[in-house]
Amino acid sequence: MISVLLNDIPFYFKPEERLLAFILVTSLIGPLIKNPLFYHFRWYLYRYLSFSLVLLVVVSFLGIAIGIPNMIGRGGYSGLFNHSMMLGPMAALAMLVTLRWYFIAVDRRQKLIFIILTFFCFITCVATGSRSALLGGIAGLLFFLYKTNQGNMVKYARVIVTIFVFGILTFPIWEPYTGRLSEKMEYTADEGSLTATRDLLWKSRVDEFLTSPLYGIGFASIDPILTTHGFDKETGTIEPGSSWLVALSMTGLLGFVILIILLGLNLRFIIYSHDSQASLALIGSFLSFFIVHMMAEGYIFSAGSGLFFLFWLMLGVCDDYRYTSKLITNLNTL
Image (cartoon, rainbow, N blue to C red; front, side, top):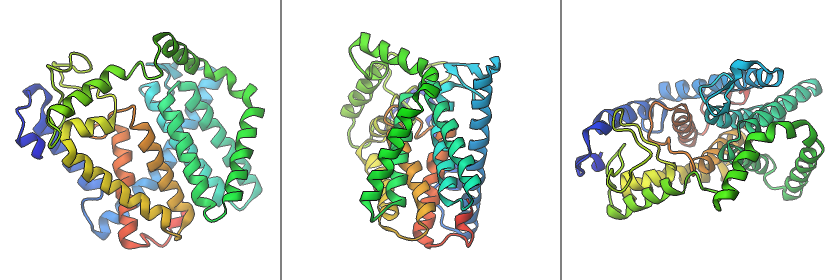
């Protein structure tokens, strides 16, 4: 709000409208309002969205594997989503959900089904060619395994080695789906930078931050003088290139520090809490995914984005749990 009041933001960015949308959505799903009704609403929303993610991603995988033409859309393999860069992160998150299901399953048949679904989600993530989604998924996986093996680092290391060996042994199965990733790696090699598709956007965000480091250049905006690409004057849409850098450039140190404190408090709680480990492991793995993925994608303030919705919902659910210790009696039924 301070960044909107203290800056002269071009009208086509619609900062007031977007700030209002941000406040309304984060109030509903984020950590702003503390109320038992909201606690339960956010938790059940999280549960059913997790199930829906898995369903959509698995159907997308089956469509891609069978070769249904409609599964190829913007950016390559898009499945049931509108873009491959949306399917990628959703597949990574779905992989974490199915891994959680595998962890709590007691029947061997169920465990087999869930590990197969986890593998399907992994292949789908690879097929989209989203490097940030794949790296975020790996970060989430490592955190999940750390949390579920907390206090037993030998077992943690053994599980990681087992997964690594499994990945090598199954490479012939998922290697045909690495085409899009290979294309991107070849392009970045030709350009001489692994982050070639983001370098200009990142530089613009840093330059904007340096012009107004305290309170930023304004919510939902960029500096049209410093930046000549990555935005549309007709619609006011922006391609920030990084959530972390856009938080710095738009809201300055004031907004960025608040965000880091909020995220840090919740991650600290997840790491040190020994209550409902499997549930907290999944929430923590989601947050770990977003920490990595948001380095290359700038949806943190985009109230119309599905990834924005999931990130703030995760913060809301975790913060609720941190304040209430036990959110609902059937917490472990996810």
